[in-house]
Each structure stands twice: as C-alpha cells, then as structure tokens.
Image (cartoon, rainbow, N blue to C red; front, side):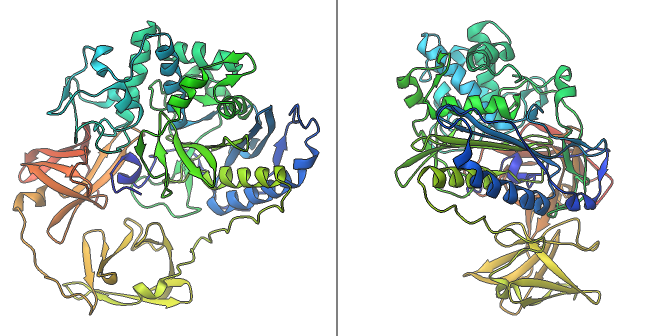
Length: 580
C-alpha cells in the first residue's frame, strides 16, 4: 500500500466512538443466523445449483463475524439477470436484540463515490460536464492555493488532484482555502475533499441538491426505492445501529470492546448513500451489464467504458490495481474486476464485481473496526459463485486469523531491547507466536502492520509496539515515545532537533466523530503523528507522511508557555487535551 497518509491510515482507520452502549465480549459467542429471501434469478429460478455455495458462504460468514467481533452484516449477490440472493446475519441493534433483515439500511461509505461519478458521466453525455475542464468552470467560487496547473474534473474523479484527504469541506475553517501537494495527475492520493467538490459540481450543473440529483439519475432508473442518497434523521429508524471501538484513543485489538457510535447526518459527495442489500443487488447488476438496467441504460456503453477506464496506478488494499472514476479496476487472468470499499463512523462495506463472469457481491457490517472492511467476504462470495458457474469444486474457506494472529516471522523480533534509562523489553518466539514477557506474564502479540503489534496488557494499551529494521534486521522497538534497541543496533543514540518541537508533543482531539484523537510524539529527534513521520516545511508547519509530495499538512499554533494548544490536520482544528 502507498504510505500516503489519509484519515484511514493516519488515524489507523480509527472511527471515533462516543459514550454509548457497550457490547459485551460475549457477543462473539452469540450464534450468527442468516436470513435469505427467495432468489428470483431469471436464469435459475430456484437457485438450486448455488445452494452448496450459499451454505459454504454462510458457514464462512458466521465464523468470520465471530472472529472479527462484528455485530451484524448484510449481503447481496447478483448476476447479469438480477438479484441472486440477499442474506442477513447478526444484529442491527444488540441492546434490543433486533436482527439484521434484508431491508435494513446500511451506510455504504465511499462506495457512494461511484454514484457521484456515474451521475457526472450522465451530465457529460448531455454536454453539461467536461472532465477535462478546470473544476472552477463549474465552481467559480472555489479557492485553491496552488503553483500548479488547474485541477480538472478528471483529476478529482481519479484522486489525482493533489488535494488533501479530509472528511468534509464543512469542517474546514471559514475562509480556509484548499491546497495541493503536487501537480495534478502526477500521483494517486485519495481525497474525500475532491468528491465533496464533485457533489457540489452536480448541484451546480443540475440546479438541485445532490441527493435529489442522485435519486433522479441513479436510484430511480435502477428501482432503488429503499435507498437514501443522503443520510438524514428521517431514515434513522430504518438504519442498523452502528458500532465502533469503545475507546477512541488507543489501538483496537481484534474482537475488542465496542460501543454504540454517535449518529451523524451526511450529505457530502464523498460518502452519503445508505442502502439495502436488495437495492444494492440492482446496482451490482447495472455494473455487471455495463450501465444497462431493466428500465433502460443509465449510461451508454461508450460512457461506461470511459467510466471504468484506468486513470492511474493505485493499489487496492495491497493488491495491484488502478483507479478509474469512483471504482478500482483490476485485470486478473482475463477477468476485469470492479471494486471499492466504504468506511463510515460506524459502518464498513465492500463491493466486488467480476465483469466477465457476470457476478457481483456487496457486503456491509454495522461497525467500523479500525480499518476493517468485509473484503474477504465479498471476494470469497465471488470465488464460490464463479466455481459454481464453471462447475468446479468449491474453493476452501479462507484461513481465519486467530485473535493472537499467526506471526510467521516471529523469530525476527525475539530478543531483548533496552531503553536509555535501562528499561527492558523481552520477546520470545514460540513457533508462529510472538510473546512479550512482562510482569511475570507471557502476552501474545497481535499483528496490525508489517512490524506493528498490539500488546493486550494495561501497560501497553495506549500505543502499538512498533519495530524498526536496519538492512532487514530488527534493531529497535518503539512504544509511544519510548525507544528501545537491541545488540544489533549500531546507529546514534542521541539526536538534535529544534527545542520548540517539545511544545508540539501531546494528545489532541477534535469533537467530530470522524477524527477523535491523535498524538504527536518525538521519536529519535523526529516528530510523528500517530506514527506518521512529519517533515518540517516552515515554523510550526509539517508535511504528513513519507512521500515528499504528500498533500497532508499539520500545523501547531497558539503556543502558551512553550506548549501548542491547538493543531490543524488537513485544515481541521484539534485542541490539546490534558490526558497523555
């Protein structure tokens, strides 16, 4: 994956929960039951040939949800002929014991971006929108501080604009212009701000609110009558209750404690759609049929081709892929896959389509588990359907990760690490398990990154335990601001840095559910923000991330007695807290 820091990676995918209903860890022992409506695939009216695949998939989903600690899930499967199956699992409301049903609304997050892109491609067909023109053609009020060429609609649609990520333009300070980190078209850098601007572009072109435009241009033609184009209080009673980590200021272990997340309304182009499994099957079928629906074409064949034409290289969750307009596109073994994920304050979704096989899957979970998306479910569903179509043996269920995880290279980290004040970390490898010996206990580590681990012990719960390498050998470890080295470390032990940086170190919070809290730390004389490196650009202002083109910026200001009381991340203000 790119080291570009977005709200997903910078905040470690942390979706910020507020005070709410605590879900007991016993949730994972609750049986997960599925509910399937009768399929009505015209080519296979009784769905009999798919029943073994459905049974295998239900078995996998039940195990997967227990393993991840997910409250509930909705799933849609579709073919060229339409809905193949919807199924629902677990709870829409754990407190009331209300189970998920096929008609339960789930927020689909950034999958909404393809709805915005599809609508704009319709306006292109009508001669109202030209992706090659500067976006200021349609938004003349837009102010962007940039030394580069103008940003076009194409750049925004393909995440190559150079704009920062952000969450919603409404969170920017009044009068705060946007800015760019690189020349448009030079890099892929995911930007929610960009799709917020595209939503505003739709409004400017059609002279209607974005929700009305999406309903008229996409939802109504596809018969998606249960879908909401924007998330409002009016739809809340039909929505699954969403959950997130109980604590928003520390790493979240697999199957960690959850709490009911705060409710928010969302009307921005970056991710505002809430839908049901039944409706999403119609969307899948339209994609499979390259823009064609039962009621006629949503966009022409030529426009659909442009819609899914790769615009830039962009890995999809570590896999080789390209980004087109609102969708990732991959070509594997003669098959073209369309994919996207969505993460909201309390929902996680995945959409996968195999154009050649004519099958698609959509899965959504009513929880955000710090970066989790039900990609494994959607991918396995396609594998099962394709095997059935090809009359091949059903593929085995994907391997489950245990809560302690299997760490194949556990020996890399074994040994003793010592800090400058004599504090020691002792780690041992036992097969594929990595154990920390602490306070007379043997604590199994859970991997959350290549060299990053969660230690489930109160003394370590606030930060991950991160390891550093020299020529691929592990030589150092970090826990928060603490630094430990082993006998293989041969670098310097003291570092110089501007002393005013000490005043930037601290715990900062934003009251928006999108952000929550972040921590600025000093490590080996360098500032980091939740582990992301900060590069100084000017006094108090830093670039966030490893790439020298990263558009993300952080600034520290309002310094009183040597301490910054405020911080801005991608233009959004955070305040210093009194907690470490």
